Image (cartoon, rainbow, N blue to C red; front, top):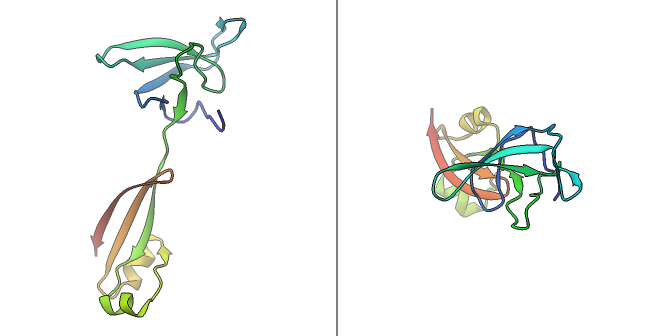
Length: 126
């Protein structure tokens, strides 16, 4: 596992909801420290408490390790006229304010990503 941060929101690798209860447990599992104590949601809707290593790895043989939930990020683009698109005018990322002021129609497009995954596009008019 790389870049696991227990101070940020988490879920299990399989997508199940989870939340960290403490990161300084004195518990050990199979002879090594397991300082993270977390609740994990089961398929039936119940919650169980499990132990994890400092890097979020599960102490169990089943890989239900903890991973950080990717943060949502927005990229703003100015809405362009069809003639701009036909002429090959490049799409340039902006802040929301710059995108609104640059667009001749005062319309901006918000592209929303979670990590590297595209989630949705929203249109905003001023």
